[in-house]
Image (tube, rainbow, N blue to C red):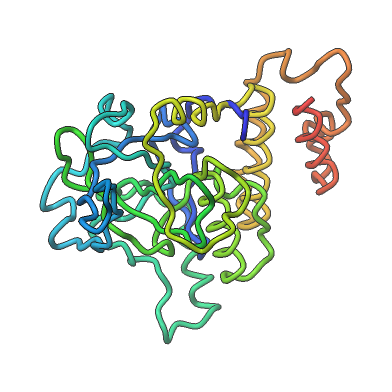
Length: 307
């Protein structure tokens, strides 16, 4: 079980979500807590189960029926009700954003060359948050399921969003889910990585389930409390943030990512920058603007700030 501690996002413009294709969007939700768990409205009980247990909906999201123009989709941050367990509530992990009125707006289509797709993506850069953006989720499960199944939240019922199925390829995944995912791999490989990341982080028991059976939700409130201790220490959070920003720079070549790294380091408290037994070769190299920062030096920055 992870013991990481996460702190709320301060700069919403530096909080960048990304799709499996590499499209980027500013989350622009100051106060967002990475790895946030919420409680959505429960679907229909399964009539075939003796205990009438929960059954995840298979109903797909339909913008014409479920989109922002039809009904309220909730705010950029969870409501207090979404954070509390209760009757008819099932826990989910918030993983990213979906463009509510046109989920597949930036999904590549057949007929476009890879060069054109890459050129258009580079031209768009880090897009501002779409006006119709809605939050996406993956269910908290007992074991790691064999497949990742994603949902968006729509039409609140008694203060809780209702889940609808959504294609993972249209989700702008939050930056914490891209940590450790290689940038120099194919889209197919990125899909495998991100799907593993999300279902792994949403599982209470981390070892892979031995049987390929449908995952069951955990209904014990005590388990939620114990498993919800996913929070990061300030040094780990700063190091993870720097690692993510450098990964984004490697993927896009956008020097604003390096400026964001500089801002995070500059604004860090002295006890985070330099400890009594902390090396500072990488940090000094970062502040030496007469030379380009090498990959090795960038890795040293991350390592030194993690100590």
